[in-house]
Image 1: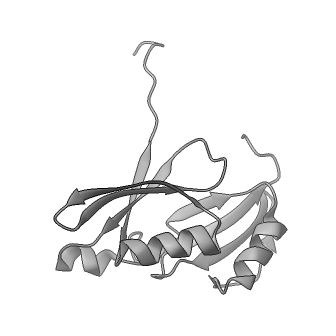
Image 2: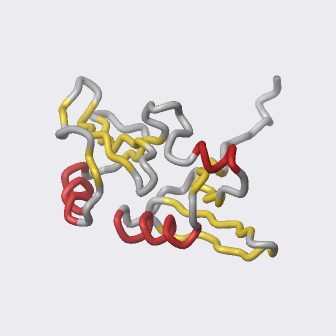
Image 3: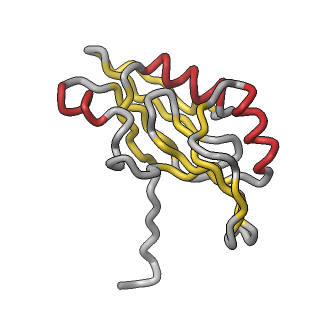
Length: 137
């Protein structure tokens, strides 16, 4: 390998039931930003969202279009936490999400690495809200 190779993960596909419901949940309840919403025709859209000031990987919302995809909604990681939302102010974001009715599966806890709580999105996908003690970003 050479030092000139530069790669990054630009999008992670998240299968959802409905584009508009998912956009509303993520932008209103989690304060994400709508990066792009382009109509591709035939009921498909290219929808990218991201946390504010993330400068990194976006979520690509992918509306399910068959039974197999419908069965994956809310369970893309087989019941485990699928995505990790790292923050610079855990309590600010936790209180906002709580006030918006986001479902938490536990009480916040302090671990060796930081403060964390598990929550679910509108389809039941599990996420960690996480503030690391020694963030790399």
